[in-house]
Length: 166
Length: 356
Image (cartoon, rainbow over all chains, first blue to last red):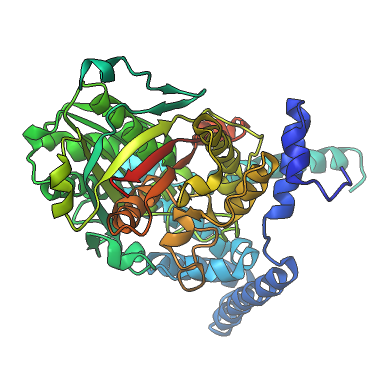
């Protein structure tokens, strides 16, 4: 596994199928160019940071207009989701994501994009079987496992309360 | 078609066929999308469609329209009508070949639907040539298509979904190409009149499915390179030739990653194709200005590069013998999700100019 110098020759002369596949996978890894993770991380930090700063801006604005902390947070979420869906519709969000990577994926704007994009794509297959069935094809796992993990955490929390730990 | 010809053995080597009376390529058509039209081969295509919907309602619809136009254009360029074509052999990437079925329904040509993923052009042409040389048809048409947005929708993500494509990912070509293949009944004295050279399909090498265990669908070049290696190596062995027998060995859509791997693998068999290898996926886009990463892919990639670019180069006599090897990766979203690796396939078509 630590042999980083797997060559095409090693792959071709290998007769065992599993070893051949393993060697070819290692060889392909050497042959395939990768995104520079450090530059990618910087871009993600920049774009993700800008999105969050905009969010903070909204938050401050709503509080300035007299909203409570909770209400301002909800309005901020709504505003970011709206902006993301709007930019998705205008085909700007994919370009932003191509540059920003995880910086656009992690904030709630990424979630909104992942719901809006299938809605646009599958509209042609009808309101029910198109949009209805396929709108959560990307976001579905996030929703399912998000709810599931909060349920698990809830149970743990309940047990800890019963035990008097918290 | 003398008695002697009928008894000549066409079976060559392990996987190849050499035709007794090599079928003639009567015409080729290429309908390209906007991005392809802006690429390095843009000036070679018959038509460039600026509208990604091609006036249709959906991507699937658009691809069907492209295919219909390609088929009609090829028949028109051959100076024929639909009734002159005995069989149509075609396929595409969409589930159950819907681009083909809905595209060619109005042509009313008896058809074979084939699936070879992005190698479909090779498979269609091989079967077409076999039908013609076997005497089962006088004229056939081989046609295939792909559409960037339709392929993204089916195999990856909706278009508007924001994500980063790895450098090894390819860009599905929007376009459709068709080739009309017919019996070669050119008389010797006819040949002099033509400025353009006539091209025949001298033989074919049918590829095996080859799986080296790659599971990364964003690196299809690496998935398909072993299949191209297997087919090209077998072709050279069956023909008992060295790579320079061909002016060009042209693979379908291996892209930059796959090309390097292919050349590397073939060297192990003693075949050096580094000087005469070309890949349609690399040629069709300019990766720096068009942001296409590893290169073009899809059935349309090898099809329109063949019909637009390669056939023209051969007609002008710049290349006289070409091994055209469209490559396909045979996964589906289901096979991918259940954890299967991605097998590849490649078919070799030996193209030759007459009297070179």
